Image (tube, rainbow, N blue to C red):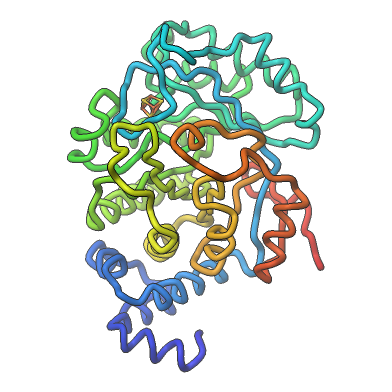
Length: 371
Ligand code: SF4
């Protein structure tokens, strides 16, 4: 329930029926999702999203201690919005060897890290065994760590390389240490966007099919949405509805992660960066539409720490983590630091009035930082 003046504002903005449904925990339609995006009153949209955020997560703002391992930037998919990938032989192209990965994961600055987030390009030169060895190497260096590895785009490539069936391939990855999968590669789950921006990459239906298969093998995943390029509000909502349907079916998604498009060094560099208002509206609409997702992440690397702070009142309940050296968004112009310390994350969350809570990769509380 909101204060009277906030309710008046919502009704004046023409959002009264959505507000009633929000209070009664009723599911919103696609048409209502578009109405929210087109609303000229983002404060009201945020206030409604905050009701659900607090219903699901109270005053907690979650984070974890994670590190990134971007094992190769060689990729043959050539997505229009990508500044990270290189062709084999290009200046700056790299693939980490198992020895380099072990050395990186073992560095003392990673003591305390509970999750390795492992992603890379689709490098046609890598054999199936490389992926298994990559997982085993990180587990050897950090036996207690949770391995969140390979988007559905990479899973598709691994399945294509594997001599095993798709379920057996997943089991082999799990035996090698895979604990969950990240939600990248979804972009906008819509045929037009796929055809226009990333037609060499797996199509939306394949991304969803692989997510379904991964969930059925017992692994949890996240789901992303890359916004701020050529997509329409209706296409963003279509994306969310597809995720919501799959979540109804499997319950396998842990969190939704909106990703702000960064245009620098991409073939879409004529497009402007999304504004802070775009960022907050995507968080808020996602929180209102995705009623069966427990968590909405503010990925501070792309949003900036200060917009992430505001987003904790616009529907987000999770500040991602320490990250420990991000490269993909920074190649595309991110000006955020490549990592944040636990102390800094805790301080940022405290400044918002929320209670910082460290979590593990599947949202079990690790430590609550009471005042
Ligand atoms: S977004 Fe991913 S799949 Fe597309 S070119 Fe970049 S690294 Fe490759």
